[in-house]
Image 1 (cartoon, rainbow, N blue to C red):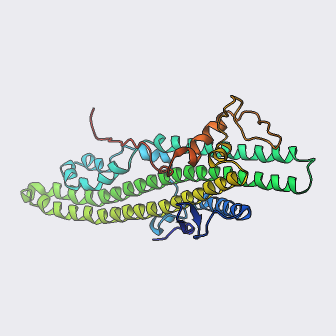
Image 2 (cartoon, rainbow, N blue to C red):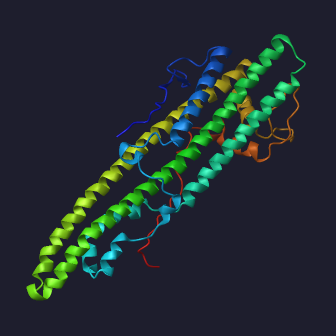
Image 3 (cartoon, rainbow, N blue to C red):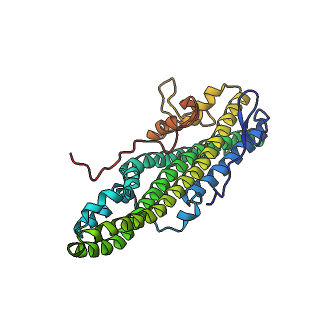
Amino acid sequence: MTSPTTQPHAWTQDDAGQGHPDGSRLAGGSEQTAADISAALSQLRLLRDTVGNKEWLSAELADGPAVPLGTLSSAASPLSALSGAGCGFLQPMISFLEEPLGQLRGEPDAVSGPAGQHDTASRQAASVADDYLSTADKETSEWSGDAKANYLRTATKLTDGVLSIAETAGTNAKAMIAAGEVVAQVIDKITQEITKAVGRIVPIMTEAIAAAPLTGGASIAKAIPECVAIAAEHGGVIAAQLAALIASGDNLVKLIEGAVGALKVVREGLKVIGDLAGGDSSGSASAVSAGPVSDGESSGMRGPQGEHEPSKGEHGKQLDRDDPDKNHGELGDPLAGEWIPIRGNEED
């Protein structure tokens, strides 16, 4: 089994409970804050690529072919071929082969829907960051000296903070899609394994049924244990696939935890920027989230002259949802969501 190729930083906490990378205190000066945010953004980009490339997969699943998300909703019963061959009485004895399928199947929309929302939030956050930095650059074009350099330096920090939110949302989107695709891949492999088992069992059982009149049914009694043993053999292969899926999921969770830790560093860094600017942490958080302002003007980040940029519409709303300061705690599990099982064999 393989481990994630990208290991998260050792995110620790100081006495005040503030997160920071590698144990260094975040409450340092402006330059240290900029370095912390920049490092966190770089790590988030690396994590996003690692998740999207499925480098977290275990060796047993890494070489498997791509399988569409639609496979999740498949209700086919590979054991139904036994009934078509006249061996339906054997199906209850080896039904354990299909049990994992009932647990893994679900609605593809339960994966693609939330993933699409996170992807949209990522794109909108990146757009807000680009617009803000572009506006800051234009509006300070006639500035010079330390005033311009200091302002643009702070604008870059804020932009990196918003881009970090965008990268985290993008990572969540990729994680959801990749996890769904891997589950679909395991469903496909289990289905193939059951089909192989049925392919070995049917000839044995049909021969035993044909000989039953001459043996008084003894041939069938003899064939049943042999067929169950074949099913158990293939069941072992299926169990190995499930173990590989669980191991891969553990790897993915570690990467997501790394992304959450990096975002905590960004949040604390933005608080420091707000404090250094003479404001409070809630004010800096409001700037990052591009939330609504009290005077009823359009949402958006302020330019250097204090004017608001045009409203970002849903951009601001989405960032407000993704801003960690607005969530009052840890980020939610990116893989959490409603999973609607499919029970293809149940009757209404």
